Length: 313
Image: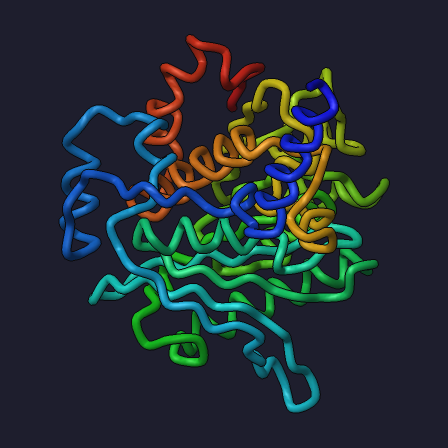
């Protein structure tokens, strides 16, 4: 009987992995009804901010364009995936930078989720091994190109509301992009890792709002993560997701991308907590230019210790 039960369990797990359901983004749609981003912003700004609201898929359909080539110069082409919100008016653009030994596909579900909430998203594919300072400067050039000519991506991009998101060493690249003059509204760092002794000089030059969403430091600690809060002079907020690993800050993880959706080091519940906090932070920054709305939305999660070790300056 025990052998039969174990066999049945293995069959169920195999079917889940084969169907990819363990790594599918949230399918339940928010009950919020909005036909335009202005309507959505109006509703959210006049109701109590709640992180749980952002766990659900947003009210807008999403169009995906995979493996597009962004022409950065006469000789440079950047491979990207584009997730366009179906909202009819101009919308913010969120640009994702992957980490070491990772790929743009490791942020596909995050990008899809943000687009459903009215924020176009662009995932970048640069060299998986760095150089990360060079990648930061490349990200800055990409931002400034789109800021000047948003139609290179889509005519519905609001070039005054570009937000950067980076995971692991990609978090360092995003921070360096801000320091190097990327004309972005700010950044969200997903359990960022510091690239070395030269990073603090870049962090000290950042003058845009930054939100750091970290893994649980008792579970996994990204290299030199403390440098970001310590060296960014002001306008930075930081929280950790309780029990989360470094890989939970991706969705799906790179390991899952390469292994039929399976990753023993991640939990979908924690990945969705990351994406809901990211969505609240990006919405807050794009709507108000600051993270106050997002911080308010975290209140219940602070109380329930879903989010821990909160600090800001």
